Image (cartoon, rainbow, N blue to C red; front, side, top):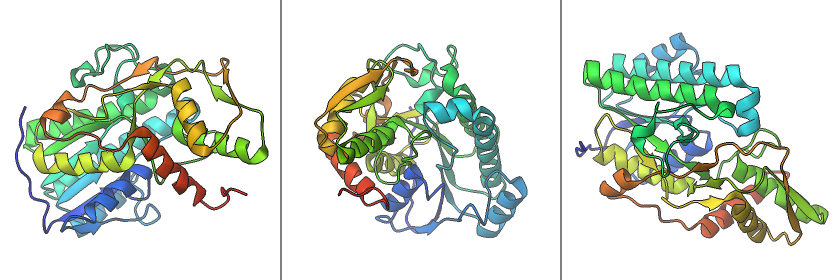
Length: 318
């Protein structure tokens, strides 16, 4: 597997999506590096607007790009906003990758998602499983957009020799998550649900689905550290999974959330709701071979995440 040292020191580094959970974590991690961090608000530059992106890149000419911007959400959001998810994410990838190429960027990292893997791909999910079978229907538009970004990075490397790489984070949690009651991911949704149940004194909390699907959860600041590590140490066409290499059932995870939040009531399961993919565990052997492993234990990370949730306006304990 190809790898080469890449120096970040002294370079202008653009984090696309710096206000999101992923981008903000990368920006926090880059604060420990000697770099010139470059960001731009979406109100100034809409990454779906090709002309705006091209103009901004021509003016700023960032040397290094972390492409973390995306339209994201949980099962309901993915299955409801299907057109927005495919259009916006393809547009973001196409505009930023082409602009990076046009303006001579030294290196770009495209952040994908583990939903790019086929629904029933062998577990743990290996990087070479991409396009080997049908996708999970509920998030297919988002997955196709992310696959398009990965293939763009591969194509620009092949045709132009661009040092563009792609990484695949697993399910993330931590500071900066979206706690919308319908459009959030499972971690944020459960934190909010258990917290509100605790405050209201509810006797039970319903978790969507059967509770049997298995998921891998990675603390977002660990993910950011892995991204910076890979930017420095990896150069190749192959994807690199970023995860812990361990998974847990949704039922077990719900009990962890209840414990961290301090909710003591009953946990039930709403089997009328979709489960999504039966299991998503990443094979992280490539990442391990490049010298990185996750450091934050799930319970420790969840405690920090709950404290971050409590700091959000309108979600404080009585």
